[in-house]
Length: 456
Image 1 (cartoon, rainbow, N blue to C red):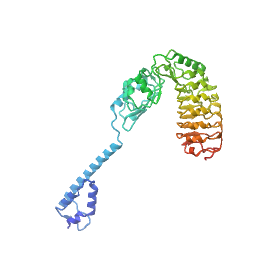
Image 2 (cartoon, rainbow, N blue to C red):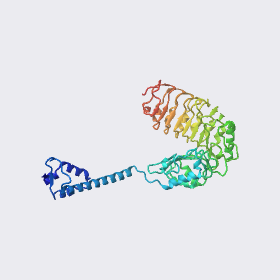
Image 3 (cartoon, one colour):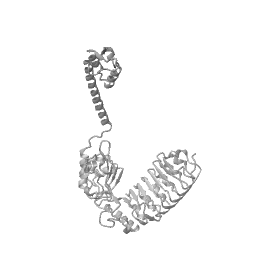
Image 4 (cartoon, rainbow, N blue to C red):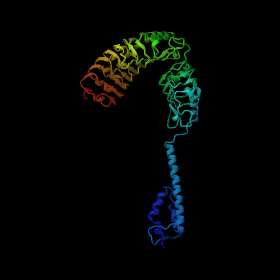
């Protein structure tokens, strides 16, 4: 057996490559290998001169030990860094036990074993595996939707521990009592629905009411000490005018119960009606003009019923109104007459839905005054005339639906000013001229339908 010289050994390609691979930057063991090698010679096999002989040399033993140590050190270092970096990037933090306890308290207080759906609840699974619970990447609860789920009883104060909530739905259950004051600790809540629960209401103290006012979308009633007698009388007239005895749901209407417990009704802390949500409820007849005296009304939703007659001009008096939904399904006939120009005075209006009716006449130019409007849905009526150029002033508009009417003329170039528009439906009318190129990039449109004008 011949020997490798020290320099041949140290210059062996496979050895040097391995050493450089095994030792990470900043952790150089090569000097140690060199020192170990220089203490001895390495036997060379005469039959296989290009392969190092293992196990027969003290030098190999020393080098082997160092390389094995380097390999394990490297693997350990690499794995540690991998776990640490993955943990920093994607591993969720331990979920706060306070939030798990809060959801458990809700389950126990509201008869969770009898809920319609309770899959995953009270398990040891992550909270986002509990049905209707959504969490962020840190495991904090951001959304809780237990509406229409047969909850009953009173809400626990622990619910306020869900401090990262931005959506909370507890509507359409059998909850009672007063909303817990602890909810005011949820500072980022954006949507809160608690309506259609018998007896559930919000405290009327200023702290709680100020918190409610800070939420973008609230549906529910406050615990008013007494109802507005004037508003109660208007509701009685509404019930009688629209055949309330035949409604699909008329729970507590015309009873001595507070009006906040009448199905579909919400009120504020002073007992004034703020919401009438009675869609899909088989309302039949003409809308009474007396609704125009509900001066605190913010939501009027009567869609998909059997309404006939004209839209009362008195609805233009509802200065706080934010949502007006009088659209019908295609098979129910619907409202007739023109669109009252008085609706143009509803400065807070965000949604105007009158689709699938039998409305006639022109679109009032006054609707261009509704600068907070987000949705204007007038499709499937019998409207005539041209689109008012004033609609181009609706700077917050996102959806404009005018399709399937009898509109004529050119599509106003002013609509190109609607920079927030993402839905524009115009098909099914008799247009002339061309469509301004400013509308070409509207994400959802019917410009490619047959007989639509070209762009210019």
